[in-house]
Image (tube, rainbow, N blue to C red; front, side):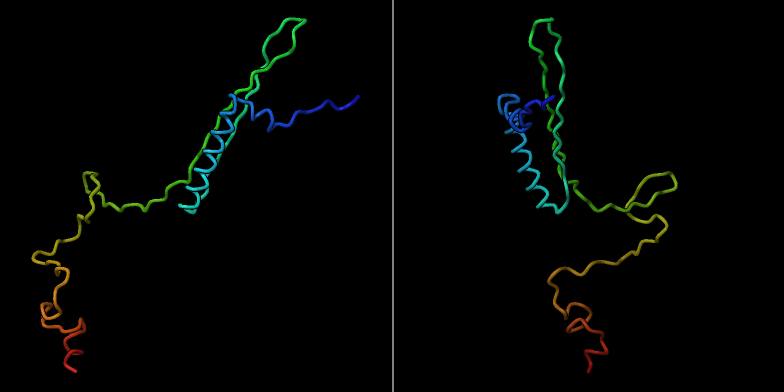
Length: 131
């Protein structure tokens, strides 16, 4: 018995949906490559083909329907988690409810002169500035 001629799968896939499958996969692959390069992480492109035989009469040529599904999964975006404290009643809050707040403490404004920072000339301790 001889091996039947097998039509190349890529030839068949090029005809699915009148070539629209090929275009969809090309666009999806290029988008995936761009996103993977930007994120430094991996993503996937999956092609699923479903072949369904169609009922035919005794003297008809056998038929199948081939449907496709393209799924592009871009690289997962990684984000840093946020830390919350939980109060006694279960509410998430950003500040530790058991930590006492310092009253009267304020930030030094941006661009403040060294002389404005308690007489320190260059950010070193007072003893170091006296040398």
